Image (cartoon, rainbow, N blue to C red; front, side):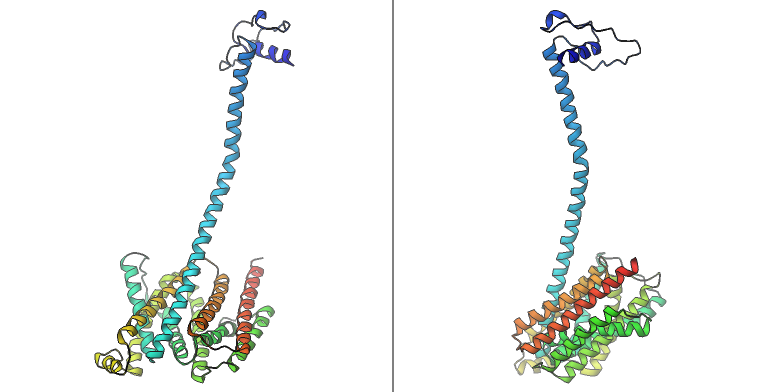
Length: 395
Protein backbone atom coordinates (compact mmCIF):
# COMPACT_ATOMS: atom_id res chain seq x y z
CA UNK A 1 0.00 0.00 0.00
CA UNK A 2 2.80 2.43 0.88
CA UNK A 3 4.58 1.56 -2.37
CA UNK A 4 1.50 2.41 -4.40
CA UNK A 5 1.10 5.76 -2.66
CA UNK A 6 4.78 6.55 -3.29
CA UNK A 7 4.47 5.71 -6.98
CA UNK A 8 1.40 7.92 -7.37
CA UNK A 9 3.15 10.83 -5.62
CA UNK A 10 6.24 10.53 -7.79
CA UNK A 11 4.15 10.59 -10.95
CA UNK A 12 2.36 13.78 -9.89
CA UNK A 13 5.57 15.53 -8.78
CA UNK A 14 6.62 18.38 -11.18
CA UNK A 15 10.30 17.98 -10.30
CA UNK A 16 12.68 15.18 -10.95
CA UNK A 17 11.93 11.81 -9.39
CA UNK A 18 12.64 11.62 -5.71
CA UNK A 19 15.93 10.26 -4.67
CA UNK A 20 15.88 6.68 -3.52
CA UNK A 21 18.21 7.43 -0.66
CA UNK A 22 15.46 9.44 1.03
CA UNK A 23 13.33 6.36 1.57
CA UNK A 24 13.94 3.25 3.51
CA UNK A 25 11.56 1.47 1.11
CA UNK A 26 12.54 -0.37 -2.07
CA UNK A 27 12.94 1.67 -5.22
CA UNK A 28 9.86 1.82 -7.48
CA UNK A 29 10.22 2.80 -11.07
CA UNK A 30 7.96 5.58 -12.30
CA UNK A 31 7.52 6.61 -15.91
CA UNK A 32 7.59 10.27 -16.80
CA UNK A 33 4.28 12.03 -17.22
CA UNK A 34 2.68 11.88 -20.62
CA UNK A 35 2.48 15.26 -22.42
CA UNK A 36 -1.31 14.87 -22.44
CA UNK A 37 -1.51 14.23 -18.70
CA UNK A 38 -2.87 17.27 -16.82
CA UNK A 39 -0.46 19.35 -14.79
CA UNK A 40 -1.18 20.06 -11.11
CA UNK A 41 1.10 22.94 -10.12
CA UNK A 42 -0.67 23.41 -6.78
CA UNK A 43 0.63 20.09 -5.45
CA UNK A 44 3.73 20.59 -3.33
CA UNK A 45 6.83 18.83 -4.80
CA UNK A 46 7.78 15.77 -2.85
CA UNK A 47 11.19 15.87 -1.17
CA UNK A 48 10.67 13.30 1.48
CA UNK A 49 7.88 10.81 2.01
CA UNK A 50 6.82 11.63 5.54
CA UNK A 51 6.65 15.45 5.19
CA UNK A 52 5.24 15.77 1.67
CA UNK A 53 2.56 13.17 2.09
CA UNK A 54 1.55 14.64 5.44
CA UNK A 55 1.31 18.19 4.08
CA UNK A 56 -0.70 17.17 1.03
CA UNK A 57 -3.05 14.89 2.95
CA UNK A 58 -3.61 17.35 5.80
CA UNK A 59 -4.42 20.20 3.40
CA UNK A 60 -6.82 18.08 1.40
CA UNK A 61 -8.42 16.73 4.57
CA UNK A 62 -8.96 20.21 6.02
CA UNK A 63 -10.51 21.48 2.78
CA UNK A 64 -12.74 18.41 2.57
CA UNK A 65 -13.91 18.86 6.16
CA UNK A 66 -14.59 22.57 5.57
CA UNK A 67 -16.61 21.80 2.43
CA UNK A 68 -18.55 19.08 4.24
CA UNK A 69 -19.37 21.36 7.14
CA UNK A 70 -20.49 24.15 4.79
CA UNK A 71 -22.66 21.86 2.67
CA UNK A 72 -24.24 20.28 5.72
CA UNK A 73 -24.89 23.57 7.45
CA UNK A 74 -26.73 25.22 4.54
CA UNK A 75 -30.03 23.25 4.68
CA UNK A 76 -29.94 23.15 8.46
CA UNK A 77 -29.55 26.93 8.58
CA UNK A 78 -32.46 27.39 6.16
CA UNK A 79 -34.61 25.01 8.18
CA UNK A 80 -33.72 26.72 11.43
CA UNK A 81 -34.59 30.11 9.90
CA UNK A 82 -37.97 28.84 8.77
CA UNK A 83 -38.68 27.29 12.17
CA UNK A 84 -37.61 30.50 13.88
CA UNK A 85 -39.95 32.56 11.67
CA UNK A 86 -42.84 30.19 12.42
CA UNK A 87 -42.12 30.39 16.13
CA UNK A 88 -42.07 34.19 16.07
CA UNK A 89 -45.31 34.31 14.06
CA UNK A 90 -47.07 31.88 16.42
CA UNK A 91 -45.80 33.81 19.42
CA UNK A 92 -47.14 37.05 17.95
CA UNK A 93 -50.53 35.49 17.21
CA UNK A 94 -50.68 34.00 20.68
CA UNK A 95 -49.93 37.41 22.17
CA UNK A 96 -52.70 38.98 20.09
CA UNK A 97 -55.16 36.36 21.32
CA UNK A 98 -54.08 37.06 24.90
CA UNK A 99 -54.58 40.81 24.44
CA UNK A 100 -57.96 40.16 22.81
CA UNK A 101 -59.14 38.08 25.78
CA UNK A 102 -57.71 40.43 28.38
CA UNK A 103 -59.32 43.52 26.86
CA UNK A 104 -62.64 41.67 26.61
CA UNK A 105 -62.49 40.72 30.28
CA UNK A 106 -61.78 44.28 31.37
CA UNK A 107 -64.46 45.66 29.06
CA UNK A 108 -67.15 43.43 30.54
CA UNK A 109 -66.09 44.24 34.11
CA UNK A 110 -65.92 48.01 33.60
CA UNK A 111 -69.08 48.03 31.51
CA UNK A 112 -71.08 46.12 34.11
CA UNK A 113 -69.88 48.45 36.87
CA UNK A 114 -70.87 51.52 34.83
CA UNK A 115 -74.29 50.15 33.91
CA UNK A 116 -75.07 49.30 37.55
CA UNK A 117 -74.34 52.87 38.66
CA UNK A 118 -75.49 54.61 35.46
CA UNK A 119 -78.40 52.61 33.94
CA UNK A 120 -78.55 54.34 30.55
CA UNK A 121 -77.32 51.78 27.99
CA UNK A 122 -77.87 53.95 24.90
CA UNK A 123 -75.84 56.84 26.32
CA UNK A 124 -73.11 54.46 27.49
CA UNK A 125 -72.94 52.83 24.05
CA UNK A 126 -72.77 56.26 22.36
CA UNK A 127 -69.86 57.25 24.60
CA UNK A 128 -68.06 54.00 23.77
CA UNK A 129 -68.47 54.66 20.05
CA UNK A 130 -67.16 58.19 20.67
CA UNK A 131 -63.99 56.70 22.19
CA UNK A 132 -63.67 54.44 19.16
CA UNK A 133 -64.07 57.37 16.78
CA UNK A 134 -61.25 59.25 18.52
CA UNK A 135 -58.97 56.18 18.37
CA UNK A 136 -59.71 55.65 14.66
CA UNK A 137 -59.03 59.32 13.89
CA UNK A 138 -55.67 59.13 15.67
CA UNK A 139 -54.81 55.90 13.85
CA UNK A 140 -55.38 57.53 10.48
CA UNK A 141 -53.80 60.87 11.42
CA UNK A 142 -50.59 59.19 12.64
CA UNK A 143 -50.49 56.86 9.59
CA UNK A 144 -50.67 53.71 11.68
CA UNK A 145 -53.06 52.40 9.01
CA UNK A 146 -53.86 53.84 5.56
CA UNK A 147 -56.98 56.00 5.43
CA UNK A 148 -59.63 54.54 3.08
CA UNK A 149 -61.42 56.44 0.33
CA UNK A 150 -65.04 55.37 0.68
CA UNK A 151 -67.17 55.94 -2.39
CA UNK A 152 -70.96 56.07 -2.56
CA UNK A 153 -71.45 52.43 -3.46
CA UNK A 154 -69.23 51.32 -0.57
CA UNK A 155 -71.03 53.62 1.84
CA UNK A 156 -74.39 52.23 0.73
CA UNK A 157 -73.12 48.70 1.40
CA UNK A 158 -71.54 49.60 4.77
CA UNK A 159 -74.56 51.48 6.14
CA UNK A 160 -76.64 48.34 6.88
CA UNK A 161 -73.60 46.87 8.64
CA UNK A 162 -73.29 49.97 10.81
CA UNK A 163 -77.00 49.90 11.70
CA UNK A 164 -76.83 46.24 12.70
CA UNK A 165 -73.58 46.84 14.62
CA UNK A 166 -75.13 49.74 16.50
CA UNK A 167 -78.28 47.82 17.41
CA UNK A 168 -76.29 44.77 18.49
CA UNK A 169 -74.13 46.74 20.91
CA UNK A 170 -77.08 48.66 22.37
CA UNK A 171 -78.99 45.43 23.00
CA UNK A 172 -75.92 43.78 24.54
CA UNK A 173 -75.55 46.69 26.97
CA UNK A 174 -79.26 46.51 27.81
CA UNK A 175 -78.80 42.83 28.68
CA UNK A 176 -75.63 43.47 30.70
CA UNK A 177 -77.48 46.10 32.70
CA UNK A 178 -80.31 43.72 33.59
CA UNK A 179 -78.68 40.30 34.17
CA UNK A 180 -75.31 38.86 35.14
CA UNK A 181 -72.42 39.06 32.70
CA UNK A 182 -72.08 35.28 32.68
CA UNK A 183 -75.75 34.83 31.75
CA UNK A 184 -75.56 37.38 28.92
CA UNK A 185 -72.61 35.57 27.39
CA UNK A 186 -74.29 32.22 27.84
CA UNK A 187 -77.25 33.49 25.81
CA UNK A 188 -74.86 34.94 23.22
CA UNK A 189 -73.52 31.42 22.74
CA UNK A 190 -76.64 31.01 20.55
CA UNK A 191 -74.93 33.02 17.80
CA UNK A 192 -74.15 29.90 15.67
CA UNK A 193 -77.86 29.07 15.58
CA UNK A 194 -78.71 32.47 14.10
CA UNK A 195 -75.71 32.25 11.75
CA UNK A 196 -77.01 29.03 10.23
CA UNK A 197 -80.57 30.34 10.07
CA UNK A 198 -79.69 33.64 8.39
CA UNK A 199 -77.13 32.07 6.04
CA UNK A 200 -79.75 29.63 4.80
CA UNK A 201 -82.31 32.40 4.36
CA UNK A 202 -80.17 35.18 2.79
CA UNK A 203 -77.18 33.35 1.27
CA UNK A 204 -78.88 30.05 0.36
CA UNK A 205 -76.18 28.13 2.23
CA UNK A 206 -77.42 24.68 3.18
CA UNK A 207 -75.87 23.49 6.48
CA UNK A 208 -74.35 20.03 6.71
CA UNK A 209 -75.66 17.32 8.98
CA UNK A 210 -72.81 17.79 11.47
CA UNK A 211 -73.38 21.54 11.67
CA UNK A 212 -77.07 21.02 12.45
CA UNK A 213 -76.23 18.30 14.98
CA UNK A 214 -73.79 20.62 16.78
CA UNK A 215 -76.59 23.15 17.31
CA UNK A 216 -78.55 20.73 19.51
CA UNK A 217 -76.29 21.10 22.59
CA UNK A 218 -76.09 24.86 21.96
CA UNK A 219 -79.85 25.33 22.14
CA UNK A 220 -80.30 22.77 24.92
CA UNK A 221 -77.51 24.21 27.05
CA UNK A 222 -78.80 27.79 26.76
CA UNK A 223 -82.31 26.61 27.66
CA UNK A 224 -81.05 24.75 30.74
CA UNK A 225 -78.93 27.71 31.85
CA UNK A 226 -81.87 30.10 31.39
CA UNK A 227 -84.28 28.00 33.44
CA UNK A 228 -81.83 27.81 36.34
CA UNK A 229 -80.43 31.38 36.21
CA UNK A 230 -80.83 33.24 39.50
CA UNK A 231 -80.67 36.68 37.85
CA UNK A 232 -83.07 35.79 35.04
CA UNK A 233 -84.88 38.80 33.60
CA UNK A 234 -87.04 38.80 30.48
CA UNK A 235 -85.70 42.15 29.28
CA UNK A 236 -82.11 40.96 29.72
CA UNK A 237 -82.86 37.61 28.08
CA UNK A 238 -84.77 39.09 25.13
CA UNK A 239 -82.22 41.83 24.46
CA UNK A 240 -79.36 39.30 24.45
CA UNK A 241 -81.27 37.12 21.97
CA UNK A 242 -82.00 40.16 19.81
CA UNK A 243 -78.32 41.10 19.88
CA UNK A 244 -77.52 37.65 18.49
CA UNK A 245 -79.89 38.30 15.61
CA UNK A 246 -78.51 41.76 14.80
CA UNK A 247 -74.85 40.74 15.15
CA UNK A 248 -75.24 37.78 12.84
CA UNK A 249 -77.17 39.95 10.39
CA UNK A 250 -74.12 42.22 10.38
CA UNK A 251 -71.92 39.23 9.54
CA UNK A 252 -74.21 38.22 6.69
CA UNK A 253 -74.13 41.73 5.24
CA UNK A 254 -70.36 41.73 5.68
CA UNK A 255 -70.04 38.56 3.59
CA UNK A 256 -72.04 40.20 0.83
CA UNK A 257 -69.84 43.29 0.99
CA UNK A 258 -66.63 41.28 0.77
CA UNK A 259 -67.73 39.93 -2.62
CA UNK A 260 -67.10 43.35 -4.21
CA UNK A 261 -63.63 43.99 -5.61
CA UNK A 262 -63.46 47.38 -3.92
CA UNK A 263 -64.14 45.99 -0.47
CA UNK A 264 -62.21 47.53 2.43
CA UNK A 265 -59.83 45.56 4.59
CA UNK A 266 -61.15 44.38 7.95
CA UNK A 267 -59.56 47.14 10.04
CA UNK A 268 -60.80 49.99 7.85
CA UNK A 269 -64.22 48.39 7.54
CA UNK A 270 -64.56 48.23 11.32
CA UNK A 271 -63.25 51.80 11.65
CA UNK A 272 -65.77 53.20 9.19
CA UNK A 273 -68.57 51.25 10.90
CA UNK A 274 -67.53 52.72 14.26
CA UNK A 275 -67.73 56.30 13.00
CA UNK A 276 -71.11 55.75 11.31
CA UNK A 277 -72.44 54.05 14.46
CA UNK A 278 -71.39 57.02 16.57
CA UNK A 279 -73.13 59.47 14.22
CA UNK A 280 -76.29 57.36 14.23
CA UNK A 281 -76.35 56.80 17.98
CA UNK A 282 -75.86 60.33 19.34
CA UNK A 283 -79.32 61.62 18.31
CA UNK A 284 -80.89 58.31 19.38
CA UNK A 285 -79.33 58.59 22.86
CA UNK A 286 -80.54 62.17 23.24
CA UNK A 287 -84.02 61.20 22.10
CA UNK A 288 -84.36 58.08 24.26
CA UNK A 289 -82.50 59.05 27.43
CA UNK A 290 -81.96 62.80 27.25
CA UNK A 291 -78.79 64.66 28.17
CA UNK A 292 -77.24 62.54 30.89
CA UNK A 293 -73.78 64.11 30.85
CA UNK A 294 -74.91 67.65 31.61
CA UNK A 295 -73.34 69.31 34.68
CA UNK A 296 -76.75 69.67 36.33
CA UNK A 297 -77.55 65.95 36.04
CA UNK A 298 -74.11 64.87 37.20
CA UNK A 299 -74.37 67.20 40.18
CA UNK A 300 -77.77 65.73 41.04
CA UNK A 301 -76.32 62.22 40.78
CA UNK A 302 -73.38 63.24 43.00
CA UNK A 303 -75.79 64.54 45.64
CA UNK A 304 -77.45 61.12 45.65
CA UNK A 305 -74.15 59.42 46.43
CA UNK A 306 -72.78 58.68 42.95
CA UNK A 307 -69.00 59.02 42.62
CA UNK A 308 -68.95 60.99 39.37
CA UNK A 309 -65.17 61.00 38.90
CA UNK A 310 -65.02 57.23 39.40
CA UNK A 311 -67.91 56.78 36.97
CA UNK A 312 -66.19 58.87 34.29
CA UNK A 313 -62.91 56.98 34.67
CA UNK A 314 -64.57 53.58 34.38
CA UNK A 315 -66.71 54.76 31.47
CA UNK A 316 -63.60 55.97 29.66
CA UNK A 317 -61.79 52.68 30.33
CA UNK A 318 -64.79 50.69 29.12
CA UNK A 319 -64.87 52.76 25.90
CA UNK A 320 -61.16 52.23 25.25
CA UNK A 321 -61.39 48.50 25.94
CA UNK A 322 -64.59 48.26 23.87
CA UNK A 323 -62.95 49.57 20.71
CA UNK A 324 -59.52 48.03 21.32
CA UNK A 325 -60.67 44.44 21.77
CA UNK A 326 -62.74 44.63 18.59
CA UNK A 327 -59.84 46.22 16.72
CA UNK A 328 -57.53 43.40 17.82
CA UNK A 329 -60.19 40.86 16.86
CA UNK A 330 -60.38 42.26 13.33
CA UNK A 331 -56.58 42.31 13.12
CA UNK A 332 -56.47 38.63 14.06
CA UNK A 333 -59.16 37.86 11.49
CA UNK A 334 -56.89 39.27 8.76
CA UNK A 335 -54.21 36.66 9.55
CA UNK A 336 -56.20 33.49 10.23
CA UNK A 337 -59.21 31.75 8.72
CA UNK A 338 -62.74 32.65 9.86
CA UNK A 339 -63.24 29.15 11.26
CA UNK A 340 -60.10 29.41 13.42
CA UNK A 341 -61.27 32.83 14.53
CA UNK A 342 -64.63 31.32 15.51
CA UNK A 343 -62.85 28.72 17.66
CA UNK A 344 -60.89 31.49 19.36
CA UNK A 345 -64.12 33.43 19.92
CA UNK A 346 -65.68 30.38 21.58
CA UNK A 347 -62.73 30.09 23.94
CA UNK A 348 -62.95 33.83 24.63
CA UNK A 349 -66.55 33.42 25.77
CA UNK A 350 -65.48 30.72 28.23
CA UNK A 351 -62.75 33.00 29.61
CA UNK A 352 -65.17 35.93 30.00
CA UNK A 353 -67.81 33.81 31.75
CA UNK A 354 -65.36 32.29 34.21
CA UNK A 355 -63.63 35.61 34.96
CA UNK A 356 -66.93 37.45 35.50
CA UNK A 357 -68.23 34.76 37.84
CA UNK A 358 -65.03 35.01 39.89
CA UNK A 359 -64.87 38.82 39.91
CA UNK A 360 -68.54 39.52 40.68
CA UNK A 361 -68.91 36.38 42.83
CA UNK A 362 -71.99 35.36 40.87
CA UNK A 363 -74.03 32.58 42.43
CA UNK A 364 -74.06 29.64 40.00
CA UNK A 365 -76.02 26.45 40.62
CA UNK A 366 -74.86 23.06 39.41
CA UNK A 367 -77.57 22.88 36.74
CA UNK A 368 -76.78 26.39 35.58
CA UNK A 369 -73.10 25.56 35.26
CA UNK A 370 -74.01 22.34 33.43
CA UNK A 371 -76.21 24.21 30.95
CA UNK A 372 -73.51 26.80 30.31
CA UNK A 373 -70.93 24.06 29.79
CA UNK A 374 -73.18 22.16 27.36
CA UNK A 375 -73.86 25.32 25.35
CA UNK A 376 -70.17 26.19 25.11
CA UNK A 377 -69.30 22.61 24.14
CA UNK A 378 -71.89 22.88 21.37
CA UNK A 379 -70.28 26.09 20.12
CA UNK A 380 -66.92 24.32 20.00
CA UNK A 381 -68.45 21.38 18.10
CA UNK A 382 -70.03 23.83 15.69
CA UNK A 383 -66.62 25.36 15.00
CA UNK A 384 -65.14 21.92 14.41
CA UNK A 385 -67.98 21.01 12.05
CA UNK A 386 -67.45 24.22 10.08
CA UNK A 387 -63.72 23.51 9.85
CA UNK A 388 -64.40 19.98 8.60
CA UNK A 389 -66.82 21.38 6.04
CA UNK A 390 -64.26 23.91 4.78
CA UNK A 391 -61.61 21.17 4.42
CA UNK A 392 -64.03 19.06 2.36
CA UNK A 393 -64.67 21.98 0.02
CA UNK A 394 -60.95 22.39 -0.67
CA UNK A 395 -60.58 18.74 -1.73
